Amino acid sequence: MISVPALALRNVDVPGSVFDAEKLRQVSIAEDLRRAFELVATVCKKPLCMTRPEIFTHGAARRWLGERLGSVRNHICLSDGSAIKVIDGLENHLFVFRSGPHKNSVALRNLLSWAPELFSHVRSQVNTFHAAALDGRLVQPPTTLLLPKARHAGVVPEFLEFFVNGHAAQENAQRIIDRGAVAAPTLSDFTEVSYIPFTESSTFDPIFSRLLAQKIAATYFNPEHCVLIRLPEMPDDAAPWLTPLTAALEAIRGLGIVLPKVPARNVLLLQHDVPESFFGSHQDRVIFTIDESFDFWRYTQAFYRRLQGVTYLFDGDRRRLPAVIQCLTSILGRPPDGRAAPAATGPWLLNWGRKKTAPRRKHGG
Image (cartoon, rainbow, N blue to C red; front, side, top):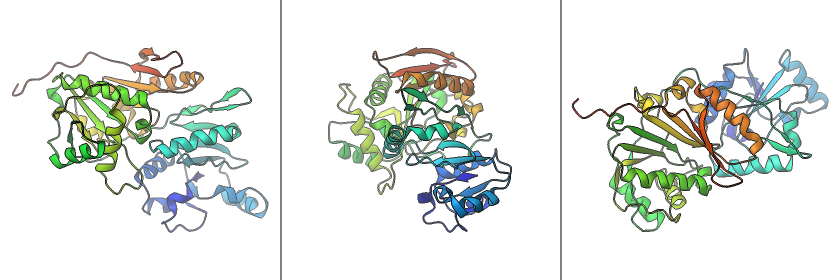
């Protein structure tokens, strides 16, 4: 049984609260929800879908559900962070598939603080490392890793050159947009390419914002390096470039880090995640810099294992660290080669598998 947030289906015609999963494949739903659904559906023999588990808690409704379920013994709750649904009598599993929006991360954090007992009913969590404090102990369902087997056939987005010139963030964002898109970078021109997905949640994290600003400042003066910044995906965004770009600029300005006021040809902005195919044969010179709000399950395990490295910013209860390290080590196929806490109480900066970078290829040779 796969339960789907009812809000995600508000404009979708489905045949009742319980229906065959095939129906979900035939309707229009958000791309991240579809990817999450397809991932969990691959491990189910004959999946069913549900929209409102809370109406089947007792009485005739629960008896009807029991008959409908038959031999089904597992329930996977697809959650946007605002609710955790459990079904009594089934093994419950949680997949928080939409961590990037700030309101979602706040909602989940509040939920685990106000109702930590919910986690005691969750047998495992898919692709996340969340935990709740219950009666002084940490309740952290074990993580089940579930990554796609095949690459997603996405398109390469447009790129804009980054720069700030002292004006207000929105005005500066508009100047960047007005300059127009530039050609996609040729990765073979660089010895190191940093890919940094900047989620909306990340823009509220001064540590991650500072990390990004420092990387931008250093790259300006190093033509051997390139930084690709995936802008925040903003919910219900009426200005697909202006709003996320303004949010990103506001987050990294005012941190005491001097950024040059001219366009950077090796610091580029993009709206959407790049597909794996974009990196081609140059993945061994690519470093991902991510935090907990990035849905790392968008990419295949084979892709991660070919990367030069991954830098992961962890900010939370240190008792959660072992699960994070174990899972990311499993994905990358190598242990972290370093960790550092910027302050006495964290957050932690974890680095995985930095390999020797491939030599730079010159133009024409």
